[in-house]
Structures are given as structure tokens and as C-alpha cells.
Amino acid sequence: MTRKALLAVTLGTLLAGSVGCHRNTRERAEDTAEEAADKAEDAAEKAGDKAEDAAEKAGDKIEDATDK
Image (cartoon, rainbow, N blue to C red; front, side, top):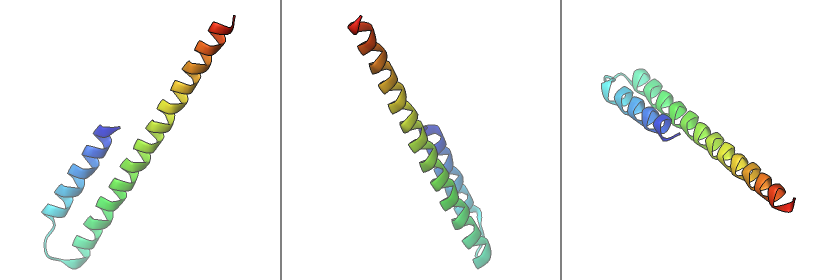
């Protein structure tokens, strides 16, 4: 989860730092960095949802076990 976010930020920084002064190239790099950040955010959100679901299932199993 955090690996993907760090990778996206690192790649975005490298792309932004390595481009020249050409406006189109710079704009494309900014777009790519934004897309990478969006993907990282989506991945983090999905991972959080999965962790929440797993915790809920575990809680349900514990509850079922204690009811018996």
C-alpha cells in the first residue's frame, strides 16, 4: 500500500525533474504524475477496504465461536 504510493511519488518526481523546458513534455509529465498519484490513492483505498472487510469477517467468526 505505502510502497505503491512512494513509488508513484518517486516516479512522478523523477519524471518532473527530468523533463526539459518544452511545454508539452512538461505538461505530459505533470499528467503522468497526477495519474500515478491517483492510481496510488485508489490502491491505498482498496487495500484499506480489504483490511476493513478482513477485520469484520474475523470479528464475525469470533462472535460465532463465542455464541456456541
